[in-house]
Amino acid sequence: MNEQPAMANQTELVPAARLRVFITEEDAAHHQALWQTILRLLKDAGVAGATVFRGTEGFGESRVIHTARLEIMSCNLPIIIEAVDAPERIEAVTPRLSALVASGLIEISRTFIVRPGAAAAGTLSEEKSC
Image: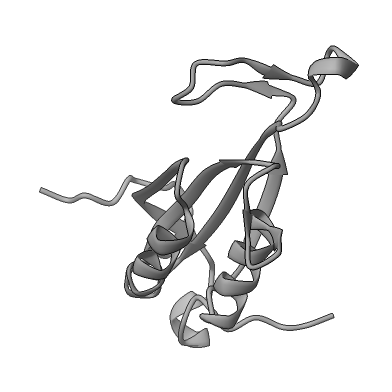
């Protein structure tokens, strides 16, 4: 069975892994915000790219809702760090992430990247700087 989704007018779909780390803004490691530590770790590990999202409302295992709607409750909002790269690169960085994330969630899922010319470029991590 073909696991790749069909794409009209697309020449190539590149298998990849998507990493999502769910933490809160008060989580810390190495005397700085945990999201900053994770972002640096992903960059140093050669991951193709990562983005940090700050949530406006959410809850986790504590079942306490954190929201930006009320100023008094706007601390400790949810943070999501998302990265997509080759499965091997995401799998290689996962043990170091697991050691950093004491409470939160690390999610890895299979995905496909639509990148025309990706095979000619070599790897997902090769990109041009501006």
